Length: 214
Image (cartoon, rainbow, N blue to C red; front, side, top):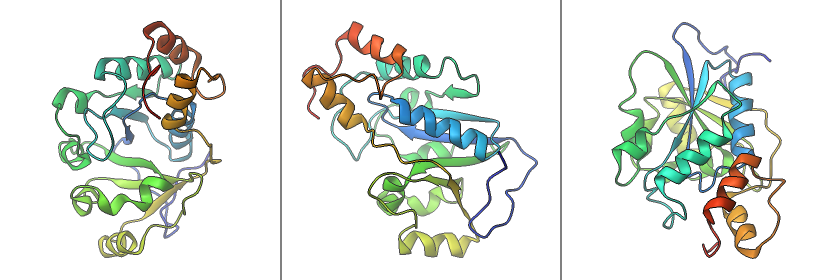
């Protein structure tokens, strides 16, 4: 597949390694996460994608699995994909997880592309110090059910002022969410269509999410 292009239509620059970053609680990681990372890897000409499990996401309720369990599930989900890497930097840092703390510590040895869905794009301006985040990464967005592909006006204005583009990932929306996966597990419903087999086995072995609220 061809390299991604900015919203302006100009080719993405080359030179430094291109690293994709996909953050989230991954509670648990599911098939759509892996598919999105693979789509970004191929379409945006990335050297690799790093999946960053959050320690304590400040915008959501307490997590159902421990940091170590979520990291292990990510490692199981990506074991067959050598260019999908698990980066535990946010878990090691601990405390409330803010994206700006992660991206501001990135070494200036690569180009960084932050991968997100349209649901996250629409609330991006609620992220802590979101304008500063734009100075460290390029945003790459994939369609999610029920949310628009266009950025909100405030974000669009900020991107324009920086002369920054918004990359698009051609990704068929998948109606899978960690919330629904947890609900299914608690209800005893099958998850074969939404969890990597190794992750499903791990969840069963450790009896995760059996009483966790959706």
